[in-house]
Length: 327
Image (cartoon, rainbow, N blue to C red):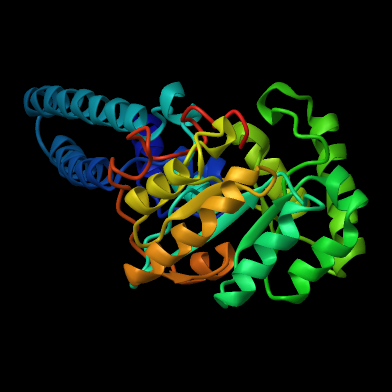
C-alpha cells in the first residue's frame, strides 16, 4: 500500500519541461488537485490507524482502502482525458487560415479598388492594343502569361513590365494542374518562371493555375518551392465563349465590386473590343485599378465571405468551384 501511495504522489509532482512525451503522462489540473486532497486524508488515516486499537485500526484501514479506490478512479479518468487522441477527421482537415494566406479570389479592402487580370497571352497583335488602352487610362493590370507565348513575344512582356503592369505565371502549355503529376507541374512552372525572368529581369510572385485547377496539396508545395500566391477570380465574363463585346462589358460592369479580381483573356478580339466601354463604365462607378499584388497588400485583417453576386454564375470563384474552361 505504501508503494501505491508513493506512485500516486509521483503523479501529483510538478511537471518537468522535457518534451511532449513527459507532458502527456501527467494529469489535468483538476485531477491533480483531487489526488492531493485524497493523499492528505490518507496521511491522516494512517496516523490515526497507528495510534488506536486493533479494532479502530481495522476501521481506519477500511476507510483507507475506500479512499485509495476513489483516488485510483480519478487517476484513471484523468489519464484518459490527458491522452485522448485527436479524431482522425480533425487531423485530416486543412487549416483554413493557411489556404487563406495562399489563395485569393477576392480581397476585402477599404476602398473602391479592383484588379483587372488578363490570361493566356501575350498575343502578338492584341496585347499591344490592350497595353495602349491601359496606358491611355493610366491603369495598371496583371497579366498571367503562358510560357510558350512569352518565349515567342518576349518584347511584349518586357513592355508590359516596363509600363508598370504585373506579370504572373500561368504555366508553359496550359495543362490542368489538378490532373497533372507534380514533376510535370514543376517543369511547367520552372520553364515559365525562367522565360518571364529572361524577358523582364524579375521572377513572378503570382500563379494562376490553368482552368483554376489545383489541389490544396499542390498549393502548399508550389508556394514552398516557388513562393507563389495562388490567384483565382470572382468576376468571369466568360469571354472565352466569344459572346460579343457588349456581353463581356455588361458582365464585368454588373458583377465587379470593391476588391474584385476580374478575369479576362487578351487573346480574344472581342475581349479587347469590350475593354474601352468596360473601363469607362467602371471608372464612372468610381473604381480604381491596381495590380493583384497591390490589391492583396490592401487587404483588411478580417475578410468576410464574398457575396453570392460576385460572378455571372452566381457563385464566388475559388479553387473548389467549377473553373472557367479557358482560365
